[in-house]
Image 1 (cartoon, one colour):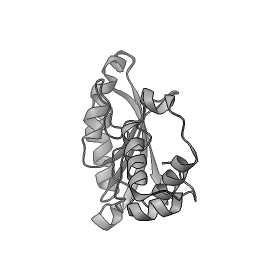
Image 2 (cartoon, helix red, strand yellow; image 1 turned 90 degrees about the horizontal axis):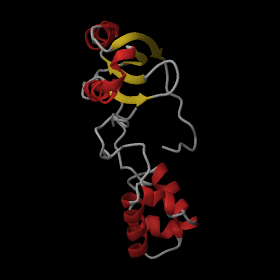
Image 3 (cartoon, one colour; image 1 turned 180 degrees about the vertical axis):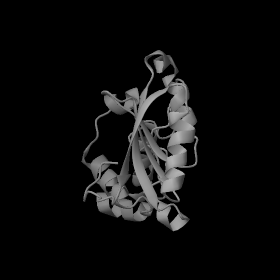
Image 4 (cartoon, helix red, strand yellow; image 1 turned 60 degrees about the vertical axis):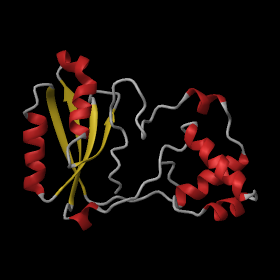
Length: 178
């Protein structure tokens, strides 16, 4: 699992991994070469530039410029190392749904930033529906998971309810979009 805190919530400006698209990314359509570069990088973000160029049938300088453009336009939001939390001694993973108090809705960004900053938080998503957030966490054991929920969520004045779901296994799709 990646420890990239993909959806850190911010005040206004885009964070490096923000899920919002830039206006340029929406205005400039992707062509076949862009799709080839994205596909290669999706499978291995460490692919050398000369291999990217060969896969797309373009010059290395063109490949470099194309990738740079994809980053600047917000199509590629970053290059990440995927870390196995279990290798770091954090073998328990869970998804925790959080519903905020009705009067706390104006502090959604503040709550998201606080939770995203915690060491156990791998990802945090602001979602639609009955719940407000879905938080992906990893901990050393179930006692640490319980402490995370009690100390950081249940005790938080903005939180109305939580539900914790243990993750047994993460089965990866063959062609992930992100």
